[in-house]
Image (cartoon, rainbow, N blue to C red; front, side):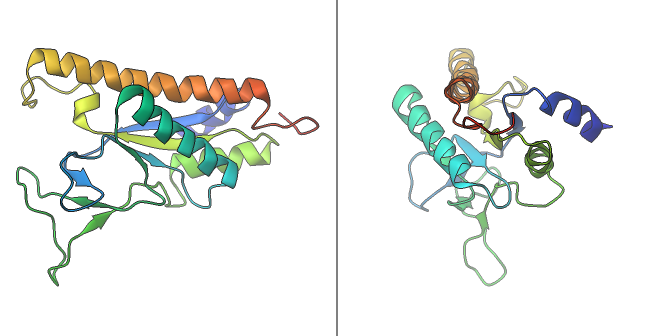
Length: 183
């Protein structure tokens, strides 16, 4: 039922954004002092236009909001053991890397992109994984004070708002559906 509902919405949608929570403790470098705040997953075989769009989101998040956002298709991340400062490791002792890119064929991001192409539309399709700093979580599980939680949640909303506004701006400019193409 979800995919049939998605088909109906995608006919007129400016794009598709799947929002997920990610575990804390993801880093680009083992010695980073700041964890990754959000990961953008572009699915399997993203177009160059989709990669360019994701790069604009990364820059806007950094420059406008001070957030550390990565494109997971291009940037695997080190992850910490839950409740620890130690990195997760594979059986051979090497650090485990995570890549929240949405590359499995049955992911909704890939379904959405494939369906949009089928109907002759070119629109952004991605997933975003937000750390618990940027989303509403149970007060019982949060270790942040109330003020920090409110600021973090507001930043998460601002990040999502930025993605939506960039999508709508590019749609208005015809970036995704250049003159003479369907959409």
